[in-house]
Image 1 (tube, rainbow, N blue to C red):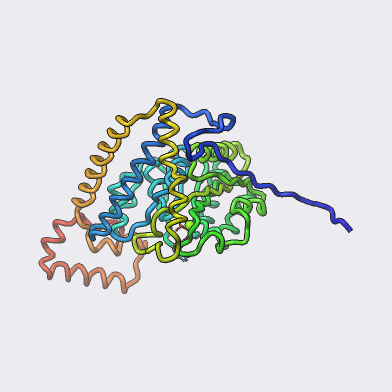
Image 2: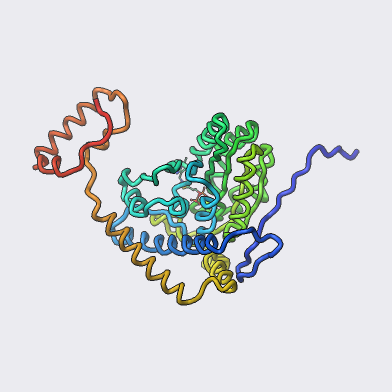
Amino acid sequence: MPLKTVAKAEIKRLEILAPDGTVDKALLPKVSDALLLQIYRLMFSIRRFDERAVMLQRSGRLGTYPMITGEEATQCVPPLCLKPSDWVVPTYRGGGVYFARGMRMRDALLYWAGDDRGTRFPEGNNDMIFSIPVGTHLTQVAGLAWGEKLKKTKGVALTYCGDGTSSKGDLHEALTFAGQFKLPAIYVIENNHWAISVPRERQSASETLAQKAWGYGVAGLQVDGNDPLAVYQATSEAVARARAGGGPTLLECETYRLSHHTTADDATRYRSEKEVESWRKRDPISRMRKFLTAKKLWNDKKEKELEESTTRWIDQEVRAYESFPPPNPLDMFAHNYALAPRALIEQRAELEELLKFKGGARILTELPPAEGRFP
Ligand SMILES: Cc1ncc(C[n+]2csc(CCOP(=O)(O)OP(=O)(O)O)c2C)c(N)n1
Ligand SMILES: [Mg+2]
């Protein structure tokens, strides 16, 4: 006996700018030349920054660093669709997101050197630092979006998670909540095809990750995540829907992690160069350059100028990072408790004594004052 169909799902994919630089004119969003150039400059600069960060790590001048090479469109474009007062919560692989939000990269370097003073964001931005445990931020972002809804601000909250993280219960809980309460939340799944050494095919039996939206009454779309124009269009629509009270969106941005998981990983041990090469041909930066060149907005001279100004900018950020004064060791006790337990109070006093003993009277006066309240 044929059964009645009670619901039907369909997942669409958005592609506008092809790897050869040609565009689907019917889908082309209305974007100013200035914005197109801004997108290109951001993607170009953050790639060069990424390369320098790896060199710093390899020469012992930086801690473990997560590369974003290949994922620049998915990272740099969504923030451009938002206001500073909207919430943005990236993952650790969020260098391009923070950069597009205006973070100073000297601070990003400081963070990856293990210094929490690197978590400074531009004044007025509602940016949050990522959590290293994957997925734990997803429900928190539903909470941030709920707050905006309750306050009637028309603000939105946008967050990211990886393809691997999309398998965690956190996304299920977050989408259930966001869908049910029609929250102004945007969840970007940055599908870079790998969760350390686990490939997308082994991650989930789901044909797409975008279709996960459907189970929660959330709008879902798959996007070519290496296509800056498609990412712009999809995010702008999601933001407009969220501000208008239309509820949350899940965007699966399909991209590729061209580098290792982090500087602590060796991706050649678990994937083929052939696969990586096939994705290099779909690079977001080169397709944008072809597009801008065809529009007469770009040429070799501008490229050379950008290359030079980017090198100068990175040199300056690295110099500023490396000349930052060392943190006061006592800061490790700050910001943890309003009223600290006795054991911690004793340990802090012990460290203070020790610092004095090691000629630390000098250290203590030279270092910045310890931060935060400590009774
Ligand atoms: C709760 C938790 N479990 C395990 C880890 C270890 N871990 C770090 S990154 C990662 C893979 C994440 O892959 P994906 O979500 O695809 O993000 P990507 O690194 O590719 O951006 C894992 C399992 C962690 N950080 N947190
Ligand atoms: Mg991944």
